[in-house]
Every structure is written in structure tokens, then in C-alpha cells.
Image (cartoon, rainbow, N blue to C red; front, side):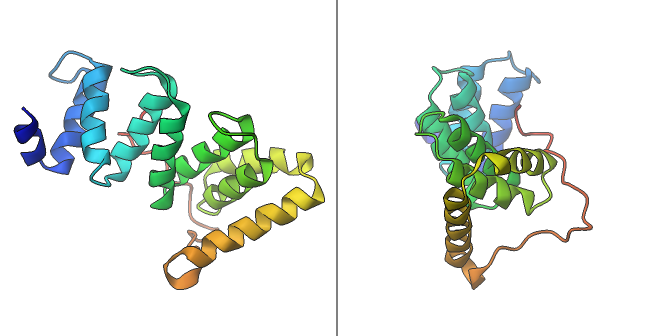
Length: 173
């Protein structure tokens, strides 16, 4: 069985996970879905990383595991996914599996907001009045450090006139 799994393309593995979450052509089975998402996520497929993070966070097909969820959200966020970036912000704001760190939460919300994510914009703006001047300065430092670590040394946000991108249909809620 493992040999057959390894021979499937990353996209086929993802689709099998998706079919198991939706019950398309197969019985709905979140444990199988998580297994297939993990196979594709380990091969760096962004949508699989995001969906595996959701499975870990919400306990779909496995026990809830915030540390694993954050790991997979971080992998998707590192690929520039604004929905994963927002989720990382929530984890730091709420202390889900990590100590509460409002500066880190603000940084991630700001990254996702730069892509036009309306939920991240709202969360960032609601968090702002709760930050001390020191936390805001630290968030700015971390944001700049993150930007400098990227190829080209800067963040590439969509133009301000661009419409927000809807969550892809194959991303779990």
C-alpha cells in the first residue's frame, strides 16, 4: 500500500483527501482525508498543508493538535498563503498551542492584510488598540525582518485596487 501511495502524484493524493472530506465517490472519512492530505503536504502542496492544518486544529479524523496545526499553517504561510497567515495570527493572538504573543499575531495579520484578506484586515485593526507602543514597534521589526528574509528582500502584496481573493473552494473551513 505504501508503495502505491508514493507513486501517486501529489495532486492525486490531495484530490483523494478532498474526496474523503466531501464524500465524493467515496464514503466521507476524515481520518483517510487527513492521511492523504499529509502525503501531499509533505511534498509541499500548499492546499494540502492548509487542509491538514485545519484537520489538526479542528480534530477532523484525528485528535486536536494545535502544535501540529500551527506547523502546517506556518508551512502554507511561508508560501505566501494569506488564509494560513491569518490563521497563524489567530494562534498567536489566542494562545492556541503557543504562548499569547500579540506582536507576532499583529505581524501575521498584517502580512495577510497586505494580500487584501478582509478577515485579516479586521482582526489586525481590532488588535491594534490592544498593543502597547513597544508591542507595535516589535511587530514592525518582526514584519521587516520577515520581509528581508524573502527572495528579493521584500513582500509582494497585491495592488490595493485588487479585489480580495476568495478562499479556494478546496480549502476546508
